[in-house]
Image (tube, rainbow, N blue to C red; front, side, top):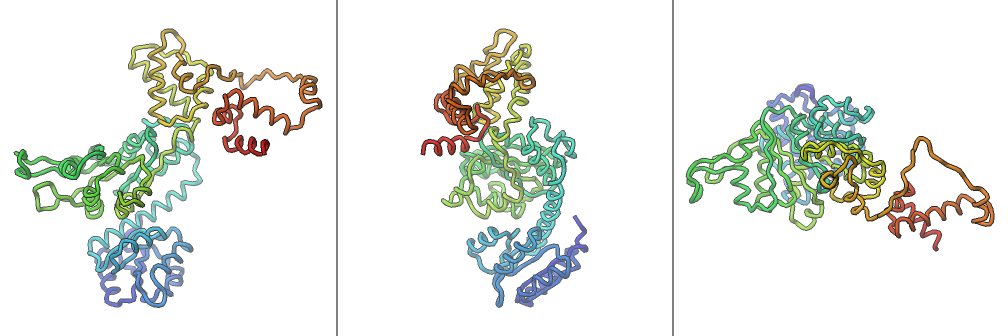
Length: 473
């Protein structure tokens, strides 16, 4: 990131006293190139003429409101961070600004430390965005990572997951929170470990599952307590936040966090402060927060079970892990790795893998994702008594006693009975006629299961469904 004196910050507010205050605070923090404006209509010209790095923007202004100005900036300068400043304490106003594209919001009058911290984080975000844009043209492979060892626990050849690794490597060096979302079993804790490893932090990674913790237990677990805080508190006890000093605190199942605990977590994220139970003196932390959930938090926002302000704080960096069904190229590499792991744990030799295993894996969606595949491989090896892997668990899962014949892809044995085709159709078939009978055969082979039939055909299920519906119409 550029040094503060090299950054150009535009401050927009119709209150001239407030403009002078913001300029003084920023100058004291080392930001010497501060441009002020009292009219929102001047903003596009000021941005264009001054290579602006960041905009501090008041919401309530005459002539052109801050929200209108924000919409213009987001449309014309999407990489330019905007911090909204408002005297309106209505949360809905802040939420609206964040949805439009504001980076952050501050209430008037802003605390000096809070203002400077928000500016630092916004500029850091801008630099990371530029880095991520530049990464778009890079070839996706592990050699393109600066710290490939940070991701060694995660087995993949998938471009989608390698792109996630590149994003994680770019944001890992910041102190901002990371939210990891994805279905159960996709490897969210493994990715949290990768964030910690790529960050280069010297402290430990400390993990806690917050699901089911009531507020008292959450506070005691994370923040600790002082002697005499409650009946059995005979000594001071540090919480996990203190143990994660200089490192990473991983909060799993964050979507299930109790409302009262959400307030305390929000303070920890915003102010870097917390109170041990029984203490009136706040303590500070430099631990980096990584949170994970398999829950759709947007639904929790709608029904009020998850705080919007906390959601926006956690969303500073958002990582979405793709489900296993969307990266099928990883099925066999994962199965092979799990097989070696199982063989070592069970004290067996690695058996030969029948060729039809790959076809079986591709006929199943794996709702339990990587965790489910891991369990299947262990079960299969446990049942194997010879030199060949027992495929019974996979056959039971797919629900097909007989799988399509696996042919040698390099040397297919293809011979056509052209006269037989003419006898079958009464004429040489058109492409449509031949495709129709092929689709029917696949559906019959899959016992009416269109998901399986589409995989046998090598097409999307939606393509098969549309074709069948069009033909039957």
